Amino acid sequence: MSTRTADWLGSAAKSKAPGRRRGDRDKPAKWGSPAVYFVALVFIAVCVAPVLYIVLGGFRTNAQITTSPAGLPHPWVFSNYSNVLKSNTFWGEFANSAVVALVSTVGIVILGLMVSFVLARYDFKLKGAMYSLFAAGLMFPLVIAITPLYIVIKDLGLVDNLAGVIIPEIAFGLPTTVIILVPFLRAIPKEIEEAATIDGAGRLGFFFRMVMPLSLPGVVTVGILAFIGSWNNYVLPLYILNSQANFTLPLGVQAFSSQYSQDTAKVLAFTSLAMLPALVFFSIFQKRIVGGLTGAVKG
Image 1: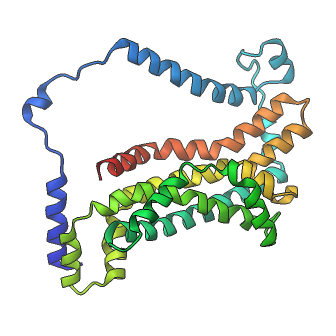
Image 2: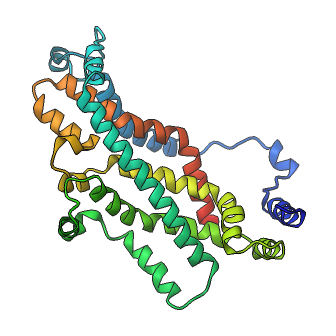
Image 3: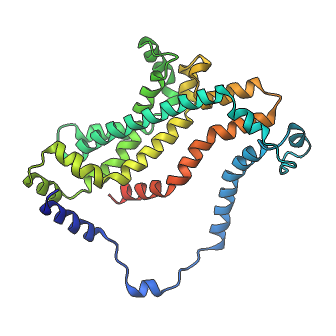
């Protein structure tokens, strides 16, 4: 990167840096209404309580769950989790979910970034119609399209194949990705592109050297959302995958709960381990999701 381009980046960063007056820093932060905090705590409790019940239920016995459904483990039983972790079925389904989630995420991010770059930086006929088409995709749920989609997947010979899950997930993940990334790419000053052109960078050079680093918050955001959505997808694998060897974890939870319907504690342990990766992934990167969505709104 040349000195000219670096100067443009530095000036753009300084112009966007939020400034705070000294008086604003000295003022104490004001607390909101107690009613707002109460409602927020109620919503948090509603969301967290089922997760805690499932996780703690895996450390109990069936007798404990029957006698005291809302009680804490006493004593704590670790064999439910250890038995699940020793199961080859669990790790096979974990590997299938990981393959589907990672490949889908990479496809969604790469294709979404390329489409968003064209829609944000270039003018051409039907540009507005194309953007509206992606926006309309947000209102087109997978459940409505599952029957014709299954017919297409069957004609392609991808039934009971992980590729038959990955390709539709990429297609249905693109609308959200485009809607988030277009404002990021549109907000990049044209002066930076002109400076890169003067330095001899072509369109691809500008895309890889300038666009991708500057749009990294948005890319991380859509990547996290795509990974979590692919990991938790249940409807599409339910229709496409038939053999248990190809099951992802959401299908594995259903099969496991049917097989061990009398062992509630073991089912809760399997469910906890199945949702743990997505939960941890979201907890670690939740700040990046909020920051990326905020940048998309500002853009």
